[in-house]
Image (cartoon, rainbow, N blue to C red; front, top):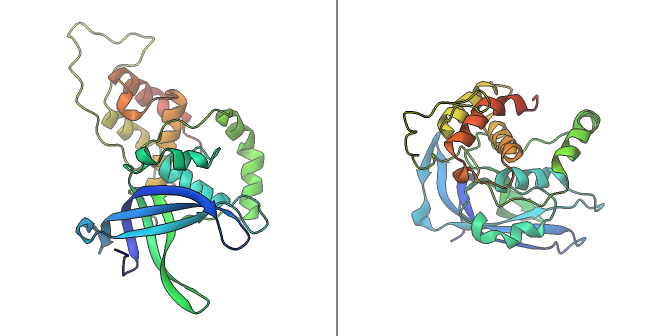
Amino acid sequence: MMPNREGLFHAHPVDIGLGETSQNKLLQVVINYRLFEELVEGQWIDCSAENLEISGYHVLEKKDHTLNTTTIDALKASLGWDGADPFWLQDNVQILSQQPVQVKLAIEEYEGQRSLKVKFLNPYGSRGGGVPKADDSMRRNVANRLGPKFRATAGGTPAPAPKPAGKPSPPKAAPPAPPAAVATAEAPAPATMEQAWEEFTKHCPPPKWDQAAIEKEWFSVLSQLFPGKQPDQLTPGDWGVMLAEGPDKILPF
C-alpha cells in the first residue's frame, strides 16, 4: 500500500534495479522501500502493520551526463556501496534487503500534479532529514586537500559485501578468555564492539560530528583495518585493534 503522508521513516530496500529516466535517458537506481518505522513527535513508532511501500528514483547522472555525486554519496553511505559499479546494488539485493535505511517522504508538484516522493535517502538511525550538498568551493578544496588520499584508499578494489547501516548491533557474546591469557606488547588487549564504539565516538565530538557522519567514518575505518570482513566476523582481538588503532585513522572533519 502506498503511504498517504509525508514524514521520516525507517525502511528496508526490498527490491533494487537499474534503468533510465524517460527524459534524457539518465541512469537511475530504482529502490522499492518497505516502511517499518515512522518518526512521530521525536519517537520511532512501528508502522509495519500498514504494509506501506514506495519506490524511490535515485538518478545517478545530471542532465549534462556528469555524475550526480549527491545521490551517489547517499547510496554509498546508506547501503555500503563503494560507488564503483552501480550494478553491484542490483546484484546484491538479497543481502541489501535485510539492511535498514532511512527515507524522507515529501509531496512534490510536477506539471500541476502533486504526489508523494522519496525526497532523501539516509543511513539507518540518521538524525538528519536530508543530504547536505557541497558547493563548488568545497569541491575544489576537498579535491586539492584529500583527493590523493581518497584515490589511494580506493585502490580500485571491488566493493566488499554490504555492511549494515546505523549503530552496529551487538555481536554474539564471546567465551571468556582463559585466565592465563595475557595481552602482549605487540597486540592490543581483546575488547568488545561496544567498547570500541564508545572509544571511537569520543574522538568524534558534536556538533562537528552528527550520528550519520560518525557511522560512515566507523565503517570506513573498519574496512581499512579488516578488508573483506563483516563486523559479525570480527573477533575480540580484532575489536581490541579497532579500539586501540581506530581513532587514529579518523579523517579530520
